[in-house]
Length: 386
Image (cartoon, rainbow, N blue to C red; front, side):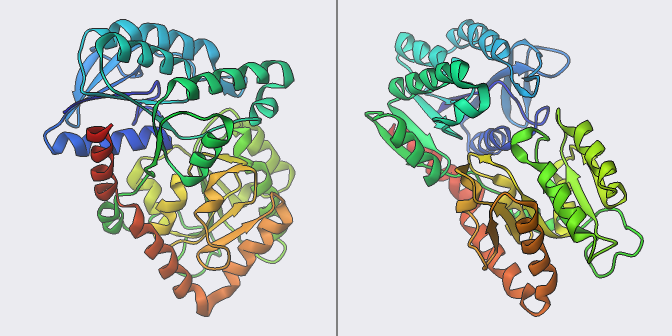
């Protein structure tokens, strides 16, 4: 098959769940003999079109800021959608898989699908619904809902990355088509080969270097500020507690300032974005991963932590699909978005001791259900039957 993936952000230049999903699926489909193309923004230097890990990458427009004032840039999404049209028109594909967010490119793909009679599948990583009002305010949020609903109406062949996302898609509109649940995954073989890594903190005991780890973009929705407050509370009983923050984003400076104000700057390590092996090494060197995000379409880092045998604490928030991955009290905890509840859950994991092995095994066994090699076969069936 000749397959096109469409998403403005491209791995490894931009690191996120959707980017990793496309990268992992694309390279595996390529290894199976399929011709894989990825259309995104040109984040790289050199030629607009080049070969990367068996895929053909198309840079349809110059790099632009993804975020403006902490929010996804509307102008960036519009420019990408416009420049995408001639790039896609030059080729003919057996299937075009477009990641729905940030929406405008979906209208381009739909037009190409009609004009060139090429089947298209819409991959939903998140469905925002009334979250738009929280994100943009009442007036602008209304237009966000209108655009999201319009995309749902034109998409007759859909993939949701979780049951959570599928239910939210069904709630906003009757799409008139099938919604297949095909989750994100992990490379279990690769993760098994990576050794724990990290920096030693004075006074830290045991075989774990980090007590807590967070990994993700440093944006408001991730609520890393609440995690820092939880570390401040935990410091009273664990003076040498060490929390590793992997990731970068518009909130980094304010988070570093908060750590100083709460006098936990010595307990926090802001590591920035990490290459994948380094990230996994740091997760393996941690006792618990905390994901206090109020909005997640899936929560890939949860499965990555499970594959490392590391339990997860996440939060009970309306738009957080990651809570559906964690079995409370078995492979982690699901609590309210509150620094005291997060601190208490982390403390329970610190104090389990005799049950840690059982918790780790439960986490790892769950990760086995999310191997990329199995997911890619299901994706291929969806493409062939769609």
